Length: 284
Length: 282
Image: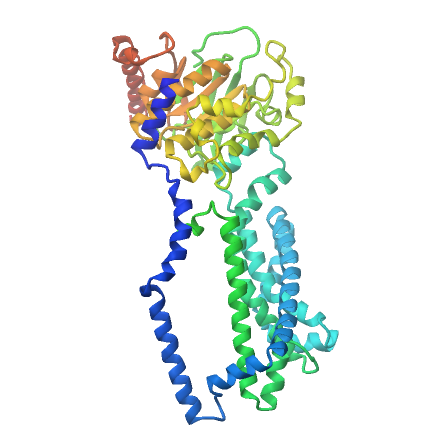
């Protein structure tokens, strides 16, 4: 046993020392970093400059740009209206995303397991990806009406491709020697998929989700704007308000949309940190 | 060609005039040509030779990862594919090949969840009566502690040193209770000190679990230190030049490495390697 102990000492001493601190330290550190002015000051100064320029522009061109206080008061007095419409858009975005995710994930597994499916599906997926969805949207509205259906389809479609490509790449990213070890145990395809391929695809999948969550909001807004008969959602709110020249409402809606996108992105990043704590990309 | 001792019963490994070439026609590279080898159960056999001599190809054939173009490969009397299906083969590749999201303990216990029907198949393989037909799953914690990884059970591979990671890979392979342990230059990426301590641990585990080991290496002293038989190979085409029995007492401790007879074996193997190299150049 002395040999074992000795070798532990030489192994961890002579080479790279184990770093238990990496996990416990990095998080509080990155959180505390916001206290330092060197971190937050540049952003605050930049925002102040933009706000000043904005106010200057609003003073000069009152018909093009509403002043910030006006936008703020619109937000405050009609908070319920914005929240309601934001939730509608958010619901469309996440439901469409879930549909697109499910379809893309299943297809990714099928294409990586069956070359026949890959050859049949991939060209169509690529064509779908390069077709501008803004152009498809009106046709879908004609086909499915002003209800949620065309919105879900458009959002699903916009999210579909990044998830498909990334997941398919991830499923094939298992290192060869790892596969060889489990092939000598005669692991079945299902076992390889479940124990090796899907976990290896997770970092790729999360990279796709970081792209796709903001995209889902774009999809929902585009769909709402294309269906001019819709009554709800922030996209609808923007097109109605701009046709009536209510600029503060337009900009307040845009602000809410941006905020929503940021919150979604934050949520994905938090989940990713939890799920991929072992992966290089989550360790700064 | 076959220098190993004739043994009664089924050999652990038997290769009969195996040929393996990559590519077709005159441009084909012959990785192995007319290779025959017999290995008795429980012995430690090293394959040594310059790169391109086909030692890794031979190993992949035994592990069932490739098929020979001609000839026959038998592991305990059955084909490598059947041996894999019965989980009789444990592979330790050049890199540890651990799953980065799993703790050390989960990494070495995952094979137990793979191919659960293997134990039954193992029992059915003929010629198995001499040994226990379906070895019980060993206590992986105990095995890890024995390998000096007791402190690291719940750590992730990224938190370990290179030597520790390779040790986890070895424990994972031993955890299968394989009849044939196949190792492809497992220590080549490690520094001298780590390498020596891992060699000792490998011999300890091998001594305890009684399995046949096929070990590919570049290092002459590693081959002499570990093996019962050193198989010297030569390139173009890949072939076996000579099998050298290493008749040194075990356990082989520090003292032995300073002794004359240890160096004699080293010199003998170096000489054979050099000759194979020169006959090739001529």
